[in-house]
Length: 394
Ligand SMILES: *Cc1c(COP(=O)(O)O)cnc(C)c1O
Image 1 (cartoon, protein in one colour):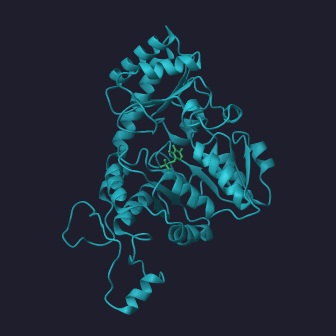
Image 2 (spheres, rainbow, N blue to C red):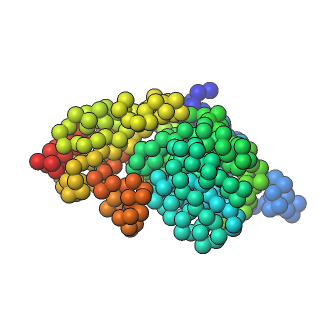
Image 3 (cartoon, rainbow, N blue to C red):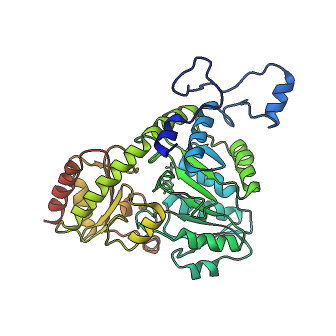
């Protein structure tokens, strides 16, 4: 079966008692057992019968199994948010005294997780330029626990050659972990690219239009000890397991993922091309554009469709504020891959709490606007952007 079909036809583990066509939402915290023996087996992990919904729930399991099937993964673990998945991933991978090799071009909270939170537990952040294999080789040493990257960085739209990083990770026998939130796992074969784990904020494309928070770890099974720590230590002891309600919403989201992604990516390309011609727009950042510095690499790794995040630069920070204020239909909001189009000025919002020096080191420019292109008619979206740019740069 192809991805679109699998997303709809992945069977449940067990036939539902009433043959419900949708996976029921098992809104129960505990599950009953027939006798002490089967109860002991379940609690000690000798069977996979659910006992308590903080650690196992059939609605969540079904969601995980669809993703495993779509991504060709050995195992998938679902969490309450993207950050819960990323923290469970890293806490299952690093120990005190080790380091994480990554980049300054990173989602703000992941950056702070590595540079602040994990640092308090004796983990060093080695931030380098992941597009330069030579620098990465220099950064990796015998204390490196993993290499961590993002498929398309936000808002810089940088794309790193994961195949190069995979070669380095393999040579050192350490996992290569990618946050692939920006490009859904249906678009590429992560294992063939050399990834050992993907982490995804399923709040974004997967949720079905900003219906719920969630995160997943997609595990190819190359590092069994890390897999065990994720499924046992992290899920049981950290308590970030996805809720059944979120799993239900996001299972519905998976059913329409491919049509939404195709439509949003097509609109984003159309709009990015039109923005390039608008007077007052200094630069457009979209990997689907021929003019983008990582256009060819992006296509090789992730295919023709380049997602729904588009950035562009205006002549000044003041113009960015005027643009945001002049929008009539596109919403002033954070988040990505909602059904609605969204716009934000990252430097003053998501990255606002950082110092100007930190923003500069992360290449978060005060002149950049970030768009998330929704499912509206692309002409309506462009018309609003165009009038707001005209108002901002007049
Ligand atoms: C949104 C996002 C996250 C965090 O996900 P939450 O679901 O908000 O916790 C992590 N990485 C990337 C690339 C994101 O866009």
